[in-house]
Length: 123
Image 1 (tube, rainbow, N blue to C red):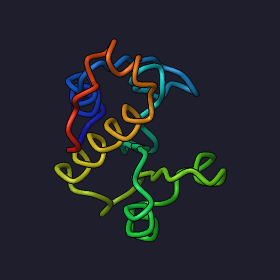
Image 2 (image 1 turned 60 degrees about the vertical axis):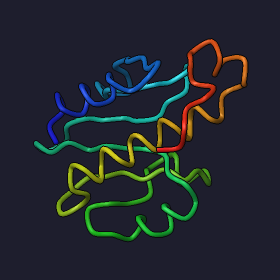
Image 3 (image 1 turned 30 degrees about the horizontal axis):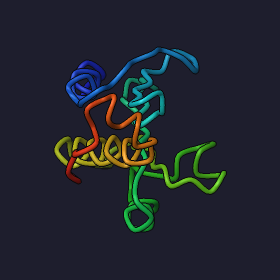
C-alpha cells in the first residue's frame, strides 16, 4: 500500500477527517479521535492503528509489526505496521476498517448519531 492508497482508503470510511501532524504524518480521525496514522519512513509506509485485545496479542510479535511506539507503552492496544513482511494490503485495510469501527463505537451515542454511525455494524 502506498501513502496515497492509505489516504484514499481512510478518506472513504464514514465521517472521517484528516490532519497532517506529528512530523508530517497523515492522521485520520473519526469524531475527533484518531483511528489511523500513516507516514513514510525510509521509503516505506508505516501505519499505526487500534486493535482489539486479542488482535494485539496475535499481531504484536509478527515480523514487520510491533506495539505502536508511545501508544502501546501506555497500555493501549495499538499496532504499527513498519516493515516487510508485515500485513498484506487486504489485511491492513481490514485492520484499519476495524480500528475506525472500534474508535467510532467508543464515541458518545449522541456523537455517533450526529455522524451517522449509530447503526454501524462491526466489520
